[in-house]
Image 1 (tube, rainbow, N blue to C red):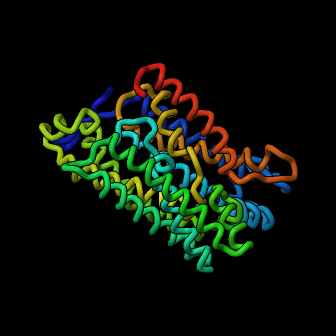
Image 2 (tube, helix red, strand yellow; image 1 turned 45 degrees about the vertical axis):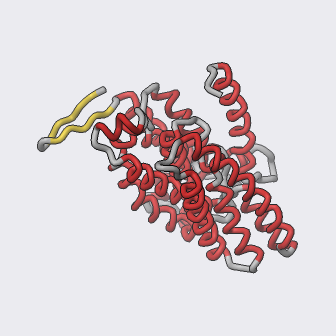
Length: 340
């Protein structure tokens, strides 16, 4: 642990965590360059960088900046948002199973999107429905979990129950949609980056520009809350206010990520845990989780496009398979440790 002091203030940081976060961020960017250069018209990494700097040919400029860059930027933003959302939730509930997928926020975003699909709304309306559904579900879960405060395990249990109910609601909504709309909804529910453009990336980027500084500003209070509500309160933290703000930030991130790429599963669950194991540091590990989530999603999307020649998979299929295996391993580990 190192401390930097300036103008009467001090900043505490862990060099290993900082190095891991920077390394994961560089890996995510390198994978992004690789993904941009891959495809039916391959472009070398040097040419990709040259084109991004404005020195490519007309054909390269069109392929890189118009066709492939928006998809990669969306993947980076969605992965970072999900990684940060998962880190916040796991820290708030003090449980490695805390993630938007498990707690029902993703299912709420899906329900909002499906309502738009059933009513014949546009793609923009679908994204707005996903955000509204996720935020409404977050408010409902918090209200149901409130009992002179919000306990982590109560939040998890109620979130799992709400997720189960919403899964049934979503299945019913699919049966009410027209055939073509239902097919579009199923692809969206899987989680996909196909055809993503700047219109998908901009709202998420704007949301992160607002939410991330708030989260980082409350990072010290979050570390104290991890020690227990009583200890945090004794240290001057307004526990419930901080918890409510951070929970709202996590829901906003997950909802806007779902609006941009659909409910991509398990990234929010695995990214914080992988970051924690690599950094080997206590605390929420917010920045390493963001970088790990971005690297995971870009790598999964690249694999989804290349695993089967001539056929592209939705990125949610890859994250679902890998994340499901990780979840089984995590449950087995927690059981052996006697925590579940």
